[in-house]
Image (cartoon, rainbow, N blue to C red; front, side):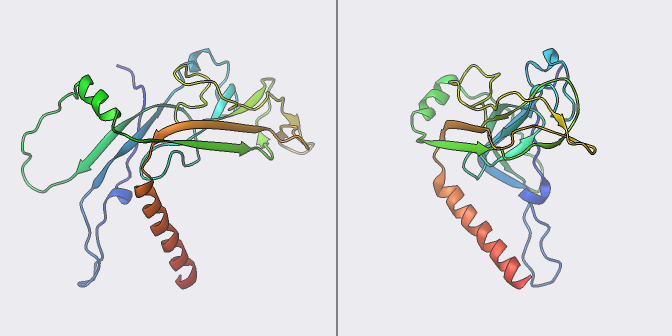
Length: 221
């Protein structure tokens, strides 16, 4: 068997041991969702890529992806792999003996019926690349790709083409130790438009709470 994609859930983010003090905040067992969990894996064309070192070499092997979850797609993340899909997941933990429930498959007609009732919203992301420094030397041309899920991914044929990649560039030696891409005064721009489920009622509240936490930490920390 071959691993197509992986996803990671950090226990520190989905559970809490609680405060040790007698009157401290109680903890909670691991729980998640229901929310989309994105999966990432090797690019389908990685075997044909001449070089794929640390996500820099190999043409378009450096990408920006976003995933689902509580934030609106996409939070901007740099990952060493391709977006391969997502699952709608709900995780809950209970003490005691398992109730014996088994894994089951959702019928395709149920999926189609639910999709009609999921309102969707368009999201746009525009990226301006100001500089690319400390890149490895090599004869291969480099470029950057901006993608949200499978939107903007040049290797994915399920979405419409987008202006999601920069022009190829050849790294130049900086005269000291590293190499850079000679963009100078002409900064490349990439843009992607995508459509996702409208869960603004969830991420608006979460982003507000996180901003409040950052403010409290910065003023009283």
